Image 1 (cartoon, rainbow, N blue to C red):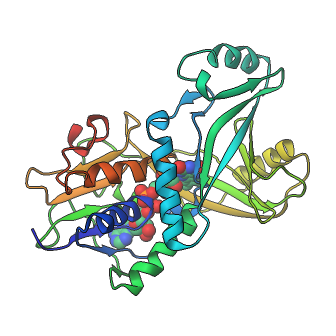
Image 2: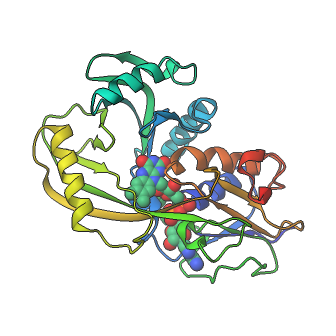
Length: 324
Ligand SMILES: Cc1cc2nc3c(=O)[nH]c(=O)nc-3n(C[C@H](O)[C@H](O)[C@H](O)COP(=O)(O)OP(=O)(O)OC[C@H]3O[C@@H](n4cnc5c(N)ncnc54)[C@H](O)[C@@H]3O)c2cc1C
């Protein structure tokens, strides 16, 4: 098929898919209405080996970390702007229960390789990194508009082919209720706050359930909240207050010049990404369900999809869009 593949949506999913098409010499055309509501513009781009209240291993972190970091380094060089940095992560215990639970947890074989040290107040994790996903998609947008490869418009999402050729929907939370994958999409709203703080160690993320990420320019980002019911893309005072308090607790000083940001994440019941063709003719595909892991999963899965010229045979079973 010589018709270029149509990629709708240019968050991290659409961007990585298009980037891999470009590397593989596969023709593509992107349609994106703009990044105002893109989760990839709002998200902090943190990638950590262990996450959440249970220090659960991030799916495929161990397998993909090094190749994904290398992919970001490559794209960083090509675009000429800084996108990725390696970090240490300080997980502080919130209470005695966490202290006991985490001390047991870090001895497990899936956690131990990423634990640098542990003390009475918390633990240090190695291996984390952070990607400026907003900067990445903005830079690629400029590049592809200049090359005539990106049209700024909106396409009505559909599971039937919308053009002569092939379409891949990379539309993040807009897939909810619009792209049928045989399983419910589960959206959630996340809020962050950005502001200023002084004197923090630059490449250390502080985390006690909420996290505080220092940026090289003296700003910090603090996040993130999780809300399943109110999905309006508006910041709420309650969430912002929680985040400002977390900032002060973690950073030891009040957050100055706070500025809210809001986005929608989307996942599915098995908490795995949703990638590949939906129909036997391979005309309609989807790349989504990236939850809070888009920075890690998008590059690796785009590469799997392109591994055999977009046939989709190399996408691993757990992530395949037709698994439901
Ligand atoms: C508060 C918050 C914090 C987060 N923190 C992290 C983190 O630390 N680490 C991490 O890895 N992930 C994080 N995430 C998740 C991460 O942002 C997502 O996994 C990722 O951005 C999803 O990318 P996407 O390309 O699927 O969707 P999006 O980034 O939402 O992109 C979808 C694109 O499609 C376009 N679009 C939609 N519908 C149409 C249409 N009909 N026609 C044309 N264009 C359309 C949109 O305009 C948008 O540009 C966070 C998310 C939130 C909300």
